[in-house]
Image (cartoon, rainbow over all chains, first blue to last red; front, side):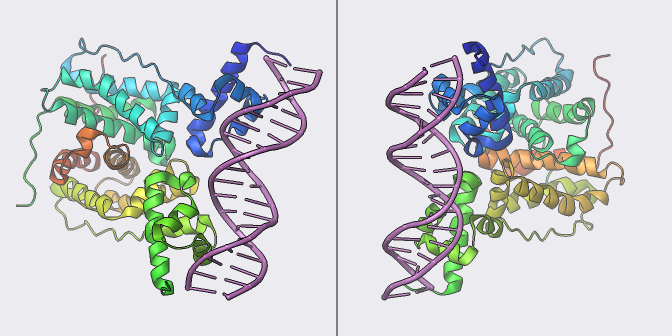
Length: 189
Length: 189
DNA sequence: GTCTATAATTCGATAGAC
DNA sequence: GTCTATCGAATTATAGAC
């Protein structure tokens, strides 16, 4: 069969995203991607040159992080939780990045960059510029940890939660990280 | 040089843990492990049979989770935070499991099993048997998320925190997950 | 116990016919 | 645009000499 260039390219990208998201970078082969897309492996090389370039295309994300400056301070946790959950469930490239960022330094840098440039400014508007990076980092740890246990490791109790249940648990946590004063109670003295 | 069987085996295991923890399962080669240990690659096969068996030995963990039943309920978050942080910084096998569990199903099952059998009972003693699995899963999501951002992705603000700073942030979060009533505030009505 | 040699696969990548 | 054939490299694993 003869397809258009755009169709073939899109089919390859879709299959690549699924494979990279499911198996990571190393375990994924050009051959398996081609088989999933129903085309010849040589076509993958023709359109993307190398495996690395194909990965870069599959993992490319253009996050349009909304402006949260209008959200009431007391609801920022709930809004952020919902936003991230929707993002994870609809954007396969995010799961690609998380799965591969664990063993691929370039992908790890992409993850760091995303949270620094997207979540950072939002947090900076809520906390002082001194504490903002730490608070954003901790919020990222909870967001990524939930994605890890829910979508990657599939810890049963976490994977079984509904979207709204997750938001109801996560919202107060993010609220605390981003807005509440940090007053560590003294440990066992 | 001629070493004892036990020494050689220990040297291989140590090198294997470092490589698996740094690069994951696929990217790690028997040759690189042997080079790190300063021995011949054939010795690795001689002692462990296959790469998979070597990995199983390197990722084997015998977690001696302490009994937390004597800890005051109000301090369980702080105690657990400190316990896990010490665990992560001293037990390289845990980082091996996290790094490989993302692409290896067997390793993922090990992670699930560890949290189910170790954290589960502790939480069951604090929360009702109905909510306990969810609460344990959410606590696991924060613990794993922190390990992910601190040790694997090395998000700068999180990686730079001192042990005590991490505990001071994490303690109230785990406390909430494990002990506080779950009363989701109504979202935007 | 240690090492050389090599078998058997697998994969990314290229060349070129149609 | 599509596919066959194949190269070259890297890897796990085995056989066997010393």
